[in-house]
Length: 216
Image (cartoon, rainbow, N blue to C red; front, side):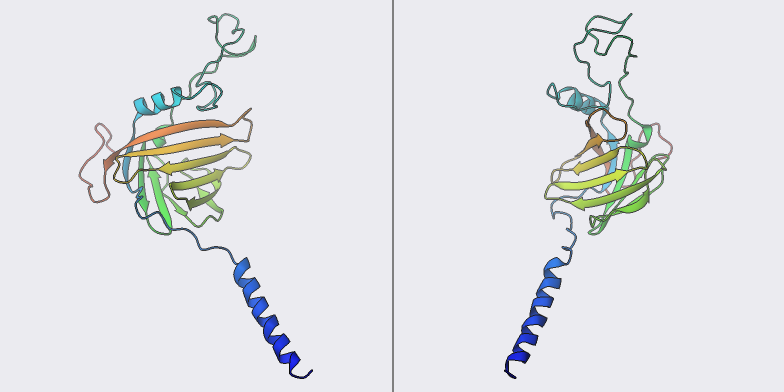
């Protein structure tokens, strides 16, 4: 019996160590080796508009009012305009100026984003939610993590909707895709919107600027 107790103690220690190891959080993922979001990007408004308009019927792609549905019409409006009688016509939303030009710096543990007229935002890509001042200057709860295809950044401002942005770039491509999904808040349904950017300058090229924009 005496020889049994040391063996039991050893087994208990091993079990505790294994339990602690298995319950510890996984290490944050690093960016895929062939994906680099870094660069200075300018919004391609035509490509973005075409991408959003080509969505399948029933797919809630686009902000409220970006697509019309057949309906009874709005009093005083043209036949076929969506909306219930007495409701105001929803206008196509205008892309905020601050996201028309985007600069991204990528490391293994974080991305730094900046846009015109907004603060520089550092987002740690470990999947943990943090208080962050976002590009629009508002406080938000933000978390970010890498997947096999790109970077997912999710943010939520107090009493506002949850915005999930997926940043995608094919290897050696000069096109950046930002897929937005907006839900919650006062929205009647989940909204989806795609922003397509063209590469204006790679990180090593700082000589180019956006024509007519003195801030770049």
